[in-house]
Length: 498
Image (cartoon, rainbow, N blue to C red):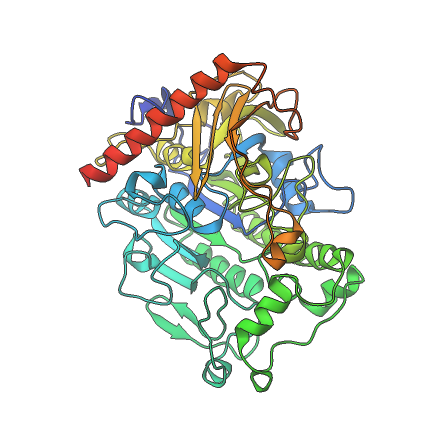
C-alpha cells in the first residue's frame, strides 16, 4: 500500500506559557493509527547509549543503536525531575508535577490529572504496562490512583514501588522475609492486573519483555500502547543473569537469604554502596545489566518486525532520569556534572530516541533542539490524531515537526525544575541553577551544601557546568530569576485551583 503524506495538522491545546504550535497527525503506510511502544530505562546514564557521540567507550548497546539508526536521537532531552517518581509524574501527565504540589519526591496523584494511558485509551488504543510503576506514594496497593489499572491501562504486569529485586519474585520468599516491602526495597510477588502473581524463577527484565511481547501479539490487529518500564539499571544493579556477569568479568554476589536478616539491610549494602566493592566492579555490573536490557529491547524490536508491525509502530526510548551515583548503579553521565538527585545536568539530561514509521519522519538523524519528556504525551496524541483534548492544558509540545525535520532549529520557551531545596531554569543556552552536587559520597550520607546563590552557565559553551558566569551577567540572572518566580507562582495557583 502506498504511504500517505501529511494527513492533517492538529493543534494540541496547551498553556500559553509553555506549549508551542501545531504539529501533524500521520497514518502509517497501512492506513492505521500508529501503535505506540514506550521503553523506559531506570537510572541509565547519559553516556550509556553507544549510538551517541559522547558515549562511554566501554558501553555497547546495539539494539538501542538500532533504534537510533532508524530514527531520531535527541541530544538535549530533559526530564521534569532528577528522580524516578517526579519524572514519571511529569511524563505521564504532560504537565509539571508541581501543578499539584509535587515539589520533591512524592505527592498523591490527583484523580483529575489525566494520564497518558487514559488519553490513548479514549483514542481507541488497547493499553498495557509492563514493569515499574512509581509515583512516589501508595506503593503495593491496587485501590489507589497510582496503580496502573486505575489510570488507563487495560493490562499490567509489574510492581508498584520504587524498587524491586530482579530475581526474588515468589510468594514463598515474600512470606519468609521480615520486610518484603521495605522503604526503597521490595521483593516477592509481582502484580498481574489486580492480583498478585508468583514467579518461582525468572528475571524481571526478561519477564517484563515476555509479557509485553504476548500483549503485542494479541493486540496486533488494533492500535496498541505498550509501556515497557524496566527496573534496569536501578539498584540492585549487580543482580544480573550469570551469562552477562561472565561476559563483562563482573563479580557474582549471593542473592538475598531471609535467614541473614532484613531485606533492606541487603539492599542498603549493595544499593547504597556500603559493601566492600570498588567503583570498577559497580561499572562492570552496570554494563552487564545494561547489556541484558539491550538484548530484551532487541526482542521487542524483533517482535515488531516478525509481526510486520515495524512500519506501524511509533517507538520511543528514554531513561527516567540521569544516571545514579557510582556506587548505586555504576552509571556514567559524562560529560555532564553530577548525577540523579541533582538539578545539575547529570540529574536531568537524558538520551531520547524516537523512531516513527518509515517515510513519516527522518531516519538516522540527530536533533540538537531542547526537548522535554513533557513533550511525549502531546506527541503521542498528535500521532493518534486526537485533536480535541478535554482536560487541563499541557505543558509540553508536539514534536512531530522535529521528527520530520530534526536538523531545523526550533526554539522553545523556558524549562523549569524544582526538587526539594534545589531549582533550575533553562532559557535558550542559559541555565540558572541552585543545586547540590551529588557524587558517589551520597552512599555515606554526605553531600555538598547548597550554594548561597544561584549559578549561571552557558550550556552551549559549557555543557559540564564548570564556569559560573553569574557575576559577569547580572541582567541574565535577574531575567531567569524572574521567569522562575513567575513559573513558581503559576504552579502554586494551579494547586489552589485544584
